[in-house]
Structure formats: C-alpha cells, structure tokens
Length: 131
Length: 187
Image 1 (cartoon, rainbow over the protein chains, first blue to last red):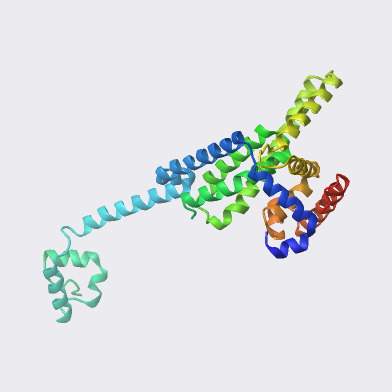
Image 2: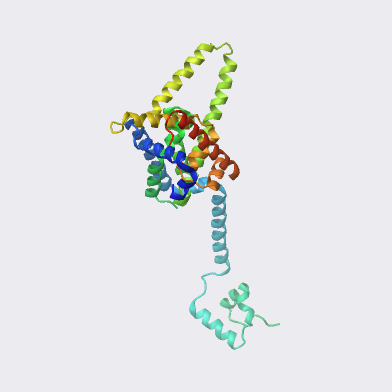
C-alpha cells in the first residue's frame, strides 16, 4: 500500500490492514511449516516441468507435435527427392564450366531454372536448347 | 519468464496473506491450507512461463477461484446429504455449527508470547469482523487494500465491473468502521 492509497481509504482500513499484517507475522509454527511444505511441493513441480520440458510442451500442444512431424517428413522427402534429380551433386568445377558456357552463349540463361537441363548437361556437355 | 528463484520469493511473500484470505472465507484451518497449496501448484504448473510481474494477479485469481470452487462443491455435497438424510436431527446440526465456529475462533487467535493480550484480542476481533463481511465485500477489501491491487485488477480477479469493486470496497470499509466502533476499537 502506498501513502496515497492510505489517505484515500481512511483510518479504518489503515487500522484493519495494520492489524492483518501483524496477524500474518504471528502465525503458529504448524501453519508456517505447512505453508513451507506447500511451497516446496509446488516448486518441485517446476523442477519436474523443466526437466521434461520438451516432451511436456509436445504433450500439452498436440498441434505443435503434428506440425513438427509434418515439417520433418517434408524435409526428408525433399532431401531424397533432390537426391534423385542431382546424382552426386555439383562440384565447383562443374559450376565454373556452366558459368563459362553461359557466358559464351552455349547455354541459355534460364538453364539454372531447369534441373533436367542441368542434369543432362552434366552427362553430356552439349547445348540442350537446339531448336 | 519467471525464474525458479523469483517464483520462490513470490510464493514466500504471498503465502501467509493467501492463507489468511482463505481462512477468512472458509473458516477452516486445514481447508484453507489445502486451498493455498492447490493454488500454488496450479500457479506453477500453468503459469510458470509468465513474467514475474503477472504472478500476483494470476495467483489471486486462482486463489479466489479455488475458494469459490470449494463453496460450490460444499453446496453440492450438502444438497446430496440433505437429500439422503431428510430426517436429520436439527439439534445435531446446531451443535456442529457451534463446534465449527469454535474451531474457527481458535484459528483466528495467533498465539504469540511477544504480543500483549489486548493486542491479540483486538486482532482476533478485527479478523472476526473481516470474516463476517459478505464474501464479495471481503474479497474487494482484501484485494484492494491488503494486496494493493488497483480497481481494474480487482475487478478482473473478481469478475465484475470496476464500479462494483468500488461499491463493495466502500461498503466493506463502512461495515468494518461500524463493527470496530461497536467493539471499542475505533481508530
């Protein structure tokens, strides 16, 4: 309570609040012990909560669990899918060669947007856009 | 997010007043302690991730709800007891009430060798006057003046308008003034 509040609530409330505050300072040992135990018990719940936080969060938020599962599946699918279209990936020299071919006009500029062109180019370095 | 230490300090600071809140409302020492424990558990289980500034209001709301829930359960239990035993002895009921009142009066007295007998008596009378206030007036008075909540916060905890809080607080102060005057402890 601040001073302004005390001025507005008047002497009655001030007297009562003062008495109540004094009353809380003189609780018997049994009550204090029980309150202490309650606090410890509540805080031990917090320990348990923190210890298994990841699992508990998923248990409490099933939508988050489903979302994470779907994202994981998508990432794994993407990984395997790309692996099929880009066998062995591309090396630095391949990329440099492609750049040179692009600059010299052997390959069209949009070749990087077409994975099948890149794949075929890696196998056989022929201009793929003969039309 | 409140740290373990912050929650510990908060609970340590509020636990005694919370117990008294519950005791004034429930008039039973053990039930009051149970209610406070449940409120602490709920606060930690549900709101440990909240900032420490929000804890007082959340705790008071949980505590008030727990007290109301206790009354609701008691009401349902009484209904079934009365339904099952319609021929219950009236005298027995009165005896029980007197016993519970006597037990409640014992709870109100806080034995302390340091305090004078007069001061203890005054404290007991003031606490009794608080306990006799209508529930809403008592809630408004304690939250507003003892817990230091503002009108808006008190209204949110009590689930009523700010005008109602002001009215309940005003009436509580008036009632207490009259009672204190009657028992000779007018300020």
